[in-house]
Image (cartoon, rainbow, N blue to C red; front, side):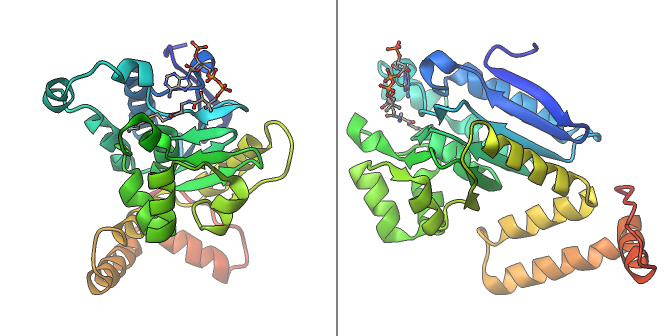
Length: 260
Ligand code: HXC
């Protein structure tokens, strides 16, 4: 394999599956692992044959957080000068959809990594938490901001200040994830791959636009966001996929998108 800490495969011709593969450390997110992850996602983003990605860990752990052993002796000067964790933001520039398939622990940076994905599916065994407070720090990979926008202040405060781990069921009720899948080993990955294939089979231009406009909702006012959505919507009338999609509907046949 190209990677030391990842296993990549194509369970469908247009879907890339990325599995974090540092099992002895419960997929603790050391810097070289994150570098590989950014590289794999950037490569897939530029690969025309891939329409969507699935990110997963193991049955026991999606990821148990940033690597505590790597961080423990760092000084302020190191983390500041070396812009520690700034490369995590690179994932936000990926334009293709990323589905997180979470089993077991998604803690600290692992929870934040799931939150950076576009859709989260969870196995009934999934456990989400921001336990940084127990280490004398706070979330550093976006948890305080993303959680607050998604689940609200009171629940985000509870997670960040107590460090309590929540169950898949709670995460579902709180709107942190799309849904909890059925029981069974590997089920969450199967369901995530099926969803990724469903998305990858659509017009890739429209999918790209859909991800872009939903993300814009977190960055702008309602009025600006609505205008932005309308402009992107207008722009799609310049694509062959819009002509094909609407013609196929009128002719009662399946659309054959060419991603042009
Ligand atoms: C480094 C880790 C690790 C981590 C687990 N390991 N989590 N190493 N960093 N985050 C290692 C353990 O040291 C151990 O190594 C091996 O993985 C197995 O873990 P155990 O603890 O023996 O397993 P278990 O008893 O089943 O407990 C599982 C666990 C626990 C509850 C998930 O490992 C745990 O609490 N991990 C830390 C969770 C955490 O605090 N995460 C937040 C990190 S801070 P050895 O060598 O002993 O076998 C963070 C900051 C984010 O994420 C900032 C932005 C990115």
